Length: 252
Ligand code: C5P
Image 1 (cartoon, helix red, strand yellow):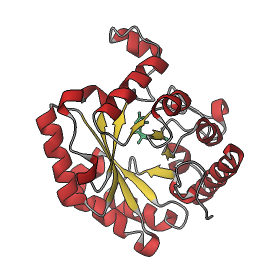
Image 2: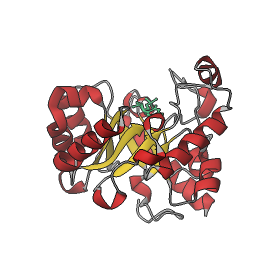
Image 3: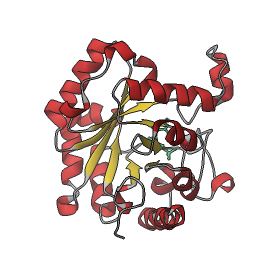
Image 4: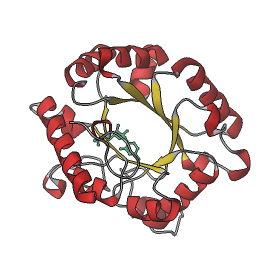
């Protein structure tokens, strides 16, 4: 699969990010070796970092050999500005060349305490707006009267004002974010379920298919269980890549 998808010039085969969840470092490395012909970006979360530190991220990227594998470091930092800055400095110092994306929580951002300037970062910084496992009732329980769509948009605005490169949101909110904040502000969408409502959502509440996420304007799709738990993970990844490529052509 080659070519760049229309819009932001991202190579089509880079748009699928595989979440290396519920596996040891050894299993993650084996998984990257099996899938790196089809997937180029792998998401590493706290469990793998607790096991092997940022060195684990480097080992995982190296498992891709000459395939140009890069890491989505999903630590979802949520702290005071000084600690956030320290965290980002550490990612820069220890992860440069390996880490392509890192995440923090949009709620922790304030306009007057912006994260370090984009020019100084070798990675893209993404803000989590509202976890895709949460819905309207969860916002209400937190005492927030906004609709999910309005809340996610507000968090996205804060993220852009604070100097983030984009957000994590569900495929349902992408269209409004792109319309308000422009095509260059990245939208990365988990909560992807090929086959839509006919498949198990597990703990996810706001789900869309790969096709719908791309048609709504998503730049990158994060997928975990639909690949990991498939009887043929490589085949599942290839099918999602094909669906993304078709949707990019349809998006035009
Ligand atoms: O298995 P599944 O495809 O549901 O995995 C989705 C991945 O995306 C998980 O690794 C989860 O941590 C991550 N994620 C999410 N919702 C967010 C941000 C990240 O599901 N808002």
